[in-house]
Length: 210
Image (cartoon, rainbow, N blue to C red; front, top):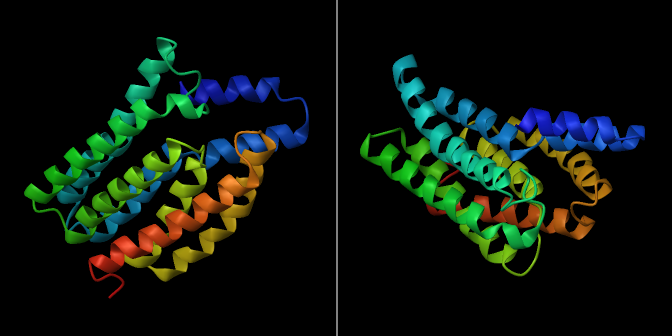
């Protein structure tokens, strides 16, 4: 569905800037960014391949599969207009499902004795989800920007500070979302700032970086 949606919009885009903005938006979509991010963290801290597959599977299921399935069903039954949930008024249920799913997944990782870094990753995602859910109740802040910023900070703190170079992706991503009239410049910038600071604070509470 995600790929079909991108292809449909790409065909409708008449100007090269519209096509470029769509490519950037799709390439940096949370449904793309989160799985890649989780792969890196789980691979970095799992002691062996078996454990990696177990923890990666749990993380992907609860952070991506369940939220996407919820959105997919809502779009199919016309409760939500699109998979990116562009209308602020339609974001409440997807947020609640995503936050609840992440909470369940994080607890499961904890009782299965997953590496501390992977469990803290889940906690960070859940707390950021609650923060942006509250903001979304009165303002349409950019989830593309917040998730990308949170992912970059997490990789810097947990894996390697070299991942900070990926902050170079923030400006073109904000431009793409603004060009497509999905967000304003301020919604993108504030999302980046809040996610960056919020994620750093969460990890600091758990004594990271060490």
